[in-house]
Length: 125
Image (cartoon, rainbow, N blue to C red; front, side):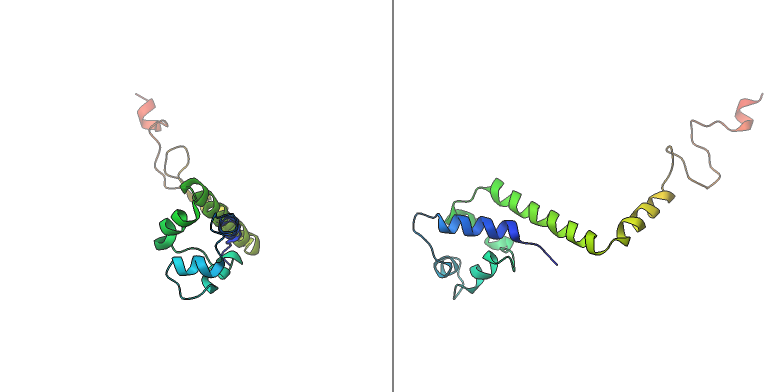
């Protein structure tokens, strides 16, 4: 399940501290929504701000690009961590797949030698 707690906290904090004292309904209407339910859902961490609305939200609430970027990255990290915690076998599968990767720049278990490993023919003249 996706996590949105950081973006939710940022939007709520900025809305409540806005000089005009925007309600959820006010902000939703400014964004083009018919009622306040959208912002309510965002602030309860049920959904995220769509990318197409990002600039408008930032302009209205005076959110810097760095603030919204960090909130979204934190939410993405929380989402990944929650997924990994509920799917513990995933890490084991990833580690196992790395075992077949080339070793020392060569071709693992193929019979080919790396350039730094001369064959018996090359060393005996």
